[in-house]
Image (cartoon, rainbow, N blue to C red):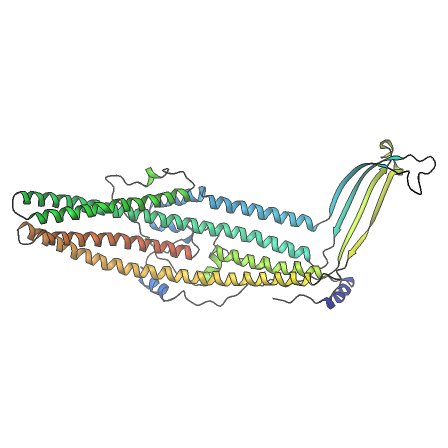
Length: 491
């Protein structure tokens, strides 16, 4: 940060102004230029290599369209229109606009219309008493205009407007950050909903099969073909699978409630839209496009939260100049024009006119070090804003690399589970055939069925995790905000 002028410099600044120059105190803002790596990291590079080369890149502004799921697109649109956090962010922009207008007004001249009536009484019990013929009571009527204008010799008002303008721009970027966050939260909650619904469907299919196994075991037991232990084990497996349903239904209900809250809707308003029908297979959507070429420098342009803290840094830098201006004299032009009379009928006569005009000044001489401490505090706040900017950028880089790593690793897990499912299906078919021939116990069938269910359940979770990792990557790259195409302006 540029150091504020010392007290001994005040005279030189005043002389320069008297010779025709004006000074703007405080440091001029310079946009940070952080040193960034050329790529996001090894995980991101591996993700780029694994993506289909002929696939179209995702449009990050509307990343949800990459999932090709009309329901997800509708939910995002509802959230954009009805989310309460977005509505609050919009009102904060309106507040910042109003504050900027107030500061612009305060920087210009002021004109007030004043009026007053006063009735006064003079005490007779003083050494002066009353003059001969003077009334003990008197009336006074006054009407006038008062004007004032503080000259912005040191750029104080300019710095105030810079700070207010940067605050407004930060609020706009805050809206973008909420936009990015809300759309990502909708995507994540929707995928968790579909995951729980898919897992519930898998569990119900397994339960139906186990019910058949239980009936078969019961019939074979009563026919004396198997021991009672086979029937009891089949019943135990069936009830254990049934016990999983409430937990999955609770997870789906929680995700649906989160979506309703994100969309600004009352409970159960999305039930009809999101509940699967009996003849519909629940699918977990996956994006069908590649991420595209991304470099760390893109975060400076696209992520609104990073742009917001950069604007906060600009505002705090300008406020150092506001605090520094308190070291120097203030000059104000004052003017008054009015009417003054003891009787209302004489108020608008030419002889009742009063006026005054002239400059005033105030020179700070002693404040116990308060002014310089205020400058030091403003400088510390600016340094805090710079640290917040650096931290936000560092977090963004890690978020991108973490999401990319999750996509790669979850994808590998899903490929492994696909191969395991093929083996588990073959194992189940073989065990059922042997059981029906009486060549193996029911335990073998139940173990094979349990293994296949576990793999199918894990596949659903891995598929959801892969899609959710894509959502995390889109959010980390600043996707979901229409205003993410322009770089912040240097002030």
